[in-house]
Image (cartoon, rainbow, N blue to C red; front, side):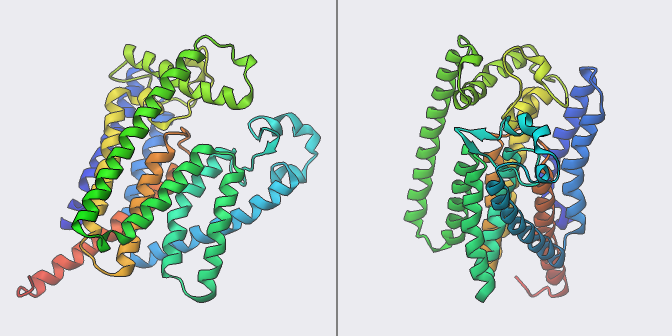
Length: 375
């Protein structure tokens, strides 16, 4: 029971979110297939890997992700030199010339997408990959460590080539969080307090600036013809306008939103997509859904932070830093991307991480009962 109780709260939030999405979908009379798909690839995937998690499986998955990431980075540079998606190289590219330009060229620069369906999905994958490679780098030795160092540098370049401004910002945040969590134990009490104060002040300022920026751009977007804007301005104004449009929907449907759908474009007049996963969750499950999603992220962070603080070795600190950086990366990148496709990477790794911590806790409990003299 101790094994499960360690992470029961984040699982409860995620399960309640999935159940509420199903209920909201039924209440709106929408097809259930996408809501059930969301259940399977969120709480289903995380719980599946939680139950299977072992130290060996976790290490193998992290190695596989690292190798897959390095291969993907290599493919990205080949694609960038070609100037078109790799699969176009095997067919008549003229047939796809128009499609190849849509969303894949900004200011005359080609945006890579690798094996993913668009550049933003690739950027999201790189954000999840970064803390994994950082952790592998911290424990590597010799030539493999040098290879990972080159891989990290190439990862930043490849991420830049996706053209995802949000992805680059979140990647820098992930690296900062990883470094902070890795060396937090060396800080004095005053240094920790000052660091927390600086982080809070920074978050307040960033939030204030972001709200003001979104409000200003959203007001302008309501009176501007999108056809007269260039691609960069159109993307910025569209993202700001999404908040106005979604809040309007939630004002009319605060409890259930619109239910889980494949595409919400038909529900709006001005915007054609949703670029923020928090807004998407609001559309899928109302204000209750957003609160449950935020509760899941916060409780997952607190659970990992608490579980990881019990172990005091360099590898344990690096592992906890990786897990926390993944949570921060996930919550950050979802401010810029709404596609749920790549969520499976996050939920699978989190299932392995939480399962591994839970089994360490179970081992401690067994050893304590076997040796009552242990404190």
